[in-house]
Image: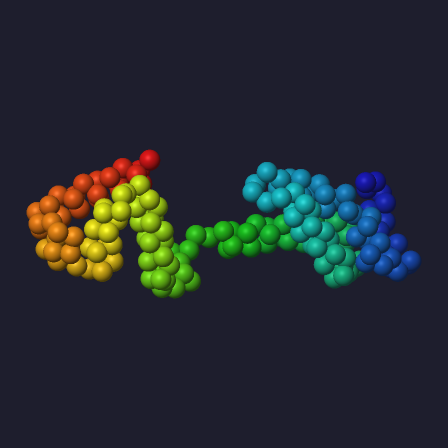
Length: 177
């Protein structure tokens, strides 16, 4: 930009009553340049340019030509808006503490956990024969003791205990695969 043109701007502003929009349009390259200085620091260049433009618009609206050159007022305003952009981003990115996260999450849904466990168990039981499936269902769904299961299917409590150990081992292997 031509410095003679900028130094004559206050006079031109008073004489021709240059509109704030004209000041903004005329100095957009300055906003672009200011944004480029802050590029690569975690904020998109377009966001930085927008912040610089906002500062330029605010400066144009509040500019008093009797106080000096427009750029000496606009550059600090645009730079300030860019810095606000970084501060706002830092507030948004601030990691929340555990307490705040737990407050937002609420209580876990026990129904979901049960449904998820049921699906996993059903998948693991697909590889079992009918007798093994019956033993698992009587023990873990119906809640029967090993002795009660043995009475129902005609086996001893010791046989049911060994069968459950084998079945659980088999299911673990099936789930790990």
